[in-house]
Length: 114
Length: 117
Image 1 (spheres, each protein chain N blue to C red):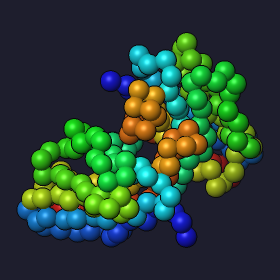
Image 2: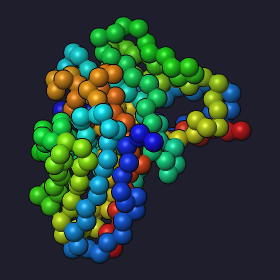
Image 3: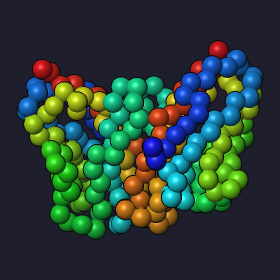
Image 4: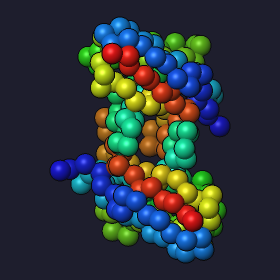
């Protein structure tokens, strides 16, 4: 399977704990995006990488959020000191930069903060 | 900042009939991309159709077609011969070309499409 994969699919954590999510993009894609989707809303763009360079991080929701893509392949999104308001679906997408910049999405990681 | 508006929170259509989902957007850019994505319940987002703003011809993918009105900043999706498998949330999305088309997408709030058997 060459689709975008995300791990874990579900995460339940207590308020104040740190969590980390992983995204593996389609292998030949050099662009990787993170989005957050809350119930009843469309996805909200968080950050974006081209290869290992993070080109847009101003929309990360707070300084508790950070993302890395160390070798230009997989990426991680970390949330420190989680709050109940962080409960959401976190989506990853990738694109090749060709084909009119179509982005292909993974299945998402659903985070529940108790 | 760009905004995308989907004014229909929910639409219902009889199986085999045609339905149109509305989308309007606001931008100051002249070149951009528009997309419709489908998100079935508990399943991942799937690209349905895309439209480049510089193309006058409306995009078509099998039973799915768009009506792109650039001056009106309108981008509606028509689904012909609706099937039960079309039931899903449908999101309209915008991507500007100022970042080379590689920026994050701006999504609308979505339209929940119900297919009546």
